[in-house]
Amino acid sequence: MEKDEKLKIVELAKGRCEKIVSGKTNPSLYVIDKISNNIRLFEEGNQNVVLNEQQIYQILNNSKRIEEIFQAPQDVEFIFNQNIFYCLQSRNITTIKK
Image 1 (tube, one colour):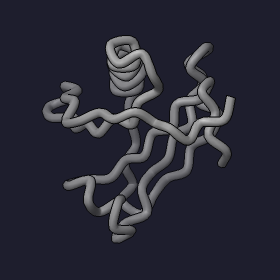
Image 2 (cartoon, one colour):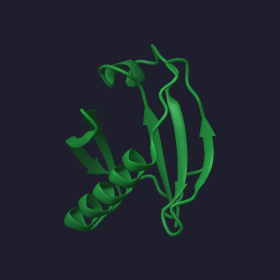
Image 3 (spheres, one colour):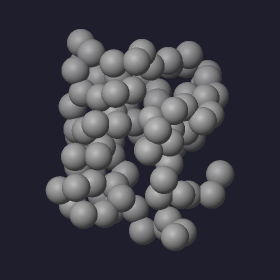
Image 4 (cartoon, helix red, strand yellow):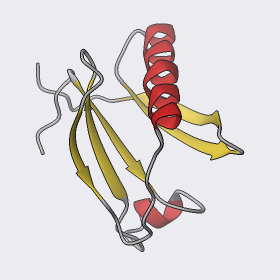
C-alpha cells in the first residue's frame, strides 16, 4: 500500500516489536483515515491481535499529539499495558508521497 499522509497505518503483534521488524510474525494491520477516523482496511495477522474502540482512539489521539510535537508524520512504536497506551519511541517518516 502506498504511504499517504491522510492515512494512519497500524501494525500490531503480541510481545516485542522485533517480531514485526525481523519478519518472524505476520502482524495485524489497520489502515485508518486520519480525518474521519474510519477503518479503511483491517487484516488479522497470525497472532489474532484485534483492537477495541478505546485502543484505536488512544492510538489516533496520541499519534496526532506526537506528530504535532515533532511537526512531521511519525513512525511510533508503542505498547498497551492494562489498556493504557505507552509510547516507546518515535521517529520521522521520510517516505510519504504528497
